[in-house]
Amino acid sequence: MVYLEDATGRLNGVVQAKQIAEPLLWSLALGACLGGNGTLVGASANVVISQIANRNNCPITFMGFTKYGFPFMLVSLVIAHLYIYLRYFMN
Image 1 (cartoon, rainbow, N blue to C red):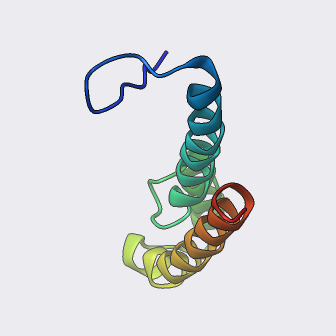
Image 2: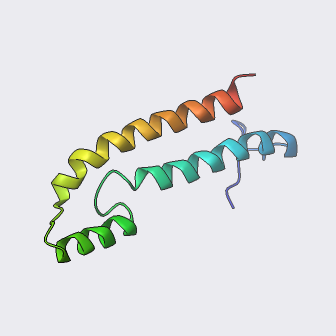
């Protein structure tokens, strides 16, 4: 469990902690999920599909995957960032 403290070191109130916790949890989940798509070893599914491709004579190199995966990861993280900002911080 992550405890949220204000500038004076006191634990935030329940209402304020709930307002902060939900966007933090969504940010963590989206960042972990989408961030793994940038490199070949970022997610286990990428490694598995690379080995399946190698067995079928269609090798996928680390840099070859990163050349395509990294830009898509950046775009998806920007979209997720905009979603979090618009959903939780634009009242």
